[in-house]
Image (cartoon, rainbow, N blue to C red; front, top):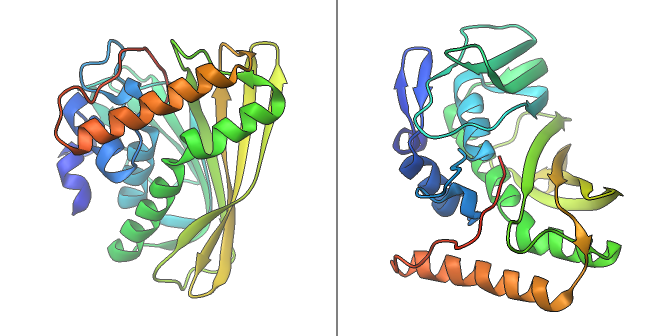
Length: 249
C-alpha cells in the first residue's frame, strides 16, 4: 500500500514522523508549505495525509465531511476508532481531537479506487498555493504575511452522485474569499469527474491569517521563493527548505 511509507500503524493507532509527513507533502501532494519541512520549528502533519489515511481505513462514503479541529505534530500516537458510526473523531491518546469525520450513504471499499481518489484529491489540494490563492488575494487586495505565511486547512466536504467510477479527477469550479479584519475565509468548490462526466462535487475550506494590504512585489518574491524550494528539493539540494515560518494542516 502506497501509504505504508508515510506512517507507522499498530492496530488502531498510527504515528507519523516529521520525515514521513514531509515526504508525503512534497512527493504526493506537491505541497511545499514550510510547516511540513521535517526541521520546521512547528512541524505539522499534512491534513491531506490524514484525509488519505481515513479513506484507506474507513472507505469513501457517498457524502463525507472532514473538519480539522487541531494541528498534529510529529510522532504523535493517533487513535483511529473501530466504528461504523455516522460521525467519529481521530484523537491523540489524551483524547484531544484533531479531525472530525461525518459520513452518509454507501461506501466504496475497493483499495484501488480509494487510492486513485485520494491521490486525485491530494494532487488538486496541493495546488492551492500559488495557483489559486494568489489570484484570489490579488482580486481582494490582501495578502498573507510573506515572512510568516499562515494558511490553515479547516475542512473539506464531498458529495458523490454516483460511485461506480474507476479513475476520478478534480477540477476547480469556483473560489471565494471573505475578509474579516486580518482573517480570510477561503472556499474552493470543485467538481469530481470520471469517465467523461461529473460524478460529484465538493468544497475545501481554508483560513488565511495575518492579512495585510496586497503588495505585488512581495507576493511575487514569495511565489519565486516557493518555486525555488520546489526546484531545490526535486534536485536533491538540501537548501530546498524554508527560511520563514508558516502554518497549516
